[in-house]
Image (cartoon, rainbow, N blue to C red; front, side, top):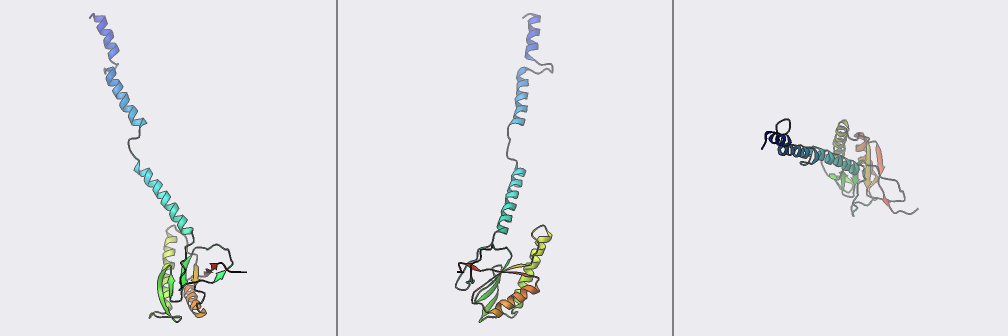
Length: 186
């Protein structure tokens, strides 16, 4: 080869930095892959999405009225009203017990509490529930509004309902919503 031919082939096969065309192409491919292709899943973004979905679902179920299971022990009176249920602490008065948020608090026998605490057990349970709601409200949740959903059997004696509502009032529950069954006649 002549010196001028050798010189021109060297110019063609190398760059000013001294690397060959093959090395330069490899470097370009390497850099192109980094910016254009997804290398894996971004876990932080996925966790953010799942957290948003979880908060949304919790808020949706919080606002939904709860289902009330009727039994021989619990049969609320019939009504023709079409008003929507407002969420609140559920206070269920059946023929045999008083429950706060579906937890049996007092067992009734002939309309009288059988435990040693009597009606005060209802007050304690409602007070504990009030404190829980206030704690949640202090940390960004729904504030305590004093709402109670009273679900009583249609044959519950007045003095039982009166004693339970008295205990609710002592624990700062001031708005009573009496839950009725749909299907009454006008």
